[in-house]
Amino acid sequence: MAISFTPSQRAAAIGVAAAVLLVGAFAAGAGLDGSTPAAASAPAGSQAVLTGQATGGSGARVTVTGTGNVTGTPNQLVLSMGVQTNGASVSTALARANRAVRGVTAALTRTGVRAADIQTSGLSIQPNYGSSPLPDGYGVSESIQVTLRNLGTAGSQISDAVRAGGNATVVDGVSLNLSDNGSLLAAARARAVADARTKAAQYARALGQPLGALVTMSEQSPVQQFPVFNGLATPAAGRAVPVHPGTQQVSVTVTAVFALA
Image (tube, rainbow, N blue to C red; front, side):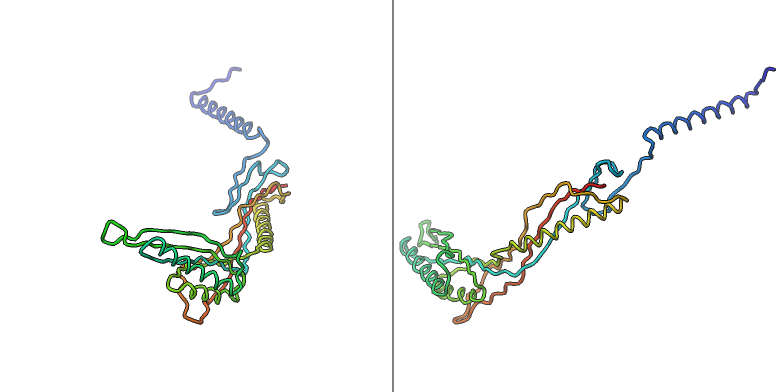
């Protein structure tokens, strides 16, 4: 028996067939790798990079940075000072400067500063001009750098050196530092590594995967802050310059790559 369709029935049949074909094509495309793609993102402001597929055993890795900070008390003071003199001639100005700097160094050695801790750091000879295009005198500057290894006596040593140089004395600045920061660096490195591992574990938990072994680790140059105080005032006679060591921070930053098991 022949079956006939009206125009409206024929249009409905064509629409159903097209829908079946479209659903089949979508199912075939979604089943190519047997999985549905998933997107993951790290928390805002984090310092982590995820590489590889986010599936166990497929070589996924997470890269994080870790920072360790420790503080210590400075035990050494480096003094930058010198003398400035003037004279009608170069020889006169230089002789005055030499005399003044010898007095400064003698005062330092008398108070216990080793000769090896006193170093010449600069010499300058410049003409002085007034209203004439010809020089009306000359100025000489001599500078030294002194390492004071005992902060308990450093204030008295500075005071004695300044008095010995008299009005020719110039102090450019002082810096307090740690002569041996090896133990502080070791502690900072341990904290940096622990910080990196903690961050990596947090990302692994967020991804629902166990944290694997460390793959690589690198360290940035350790940073140590040296407080500098400029413009040290000339102390009154018989008074030591007050020295306050405070604290100093040593910081280490590492970059670590961990596998995701």
